[in-house]
Length: 143
Image (tube, rainbow, N blue to C red):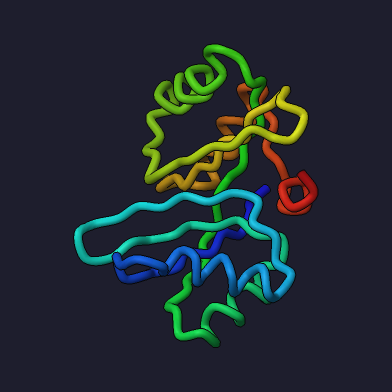
């Protein structure tokens, strides 16, 4: 029920994102989703890729600091209120969202919400109980 995500720490300077995406492309690694958070001095690039271990090795080999974490991928209909339904469930369960980002899959019928929670197991249990679809890693990689 969890998806492995890599986080790359990078200096906040021109060309760093291009360098990372080129490294991944040169190694045949497909980016399925990403999010960038930055401060004045550095950024955190969060990526879901189809080949996690290969991405980690390639980026470390190029001198980047890379970490891995687990996230939850929740599929919802891509329509008004889709995100609100999930967040209502999370609020009612008193769960804390550490961060989230989203993307729309190729069909355009569903959106995929990527979440990191303080209490991952309880979040999974709550979302499943409330009827939400949680995607497995391979399902994300194949979108």
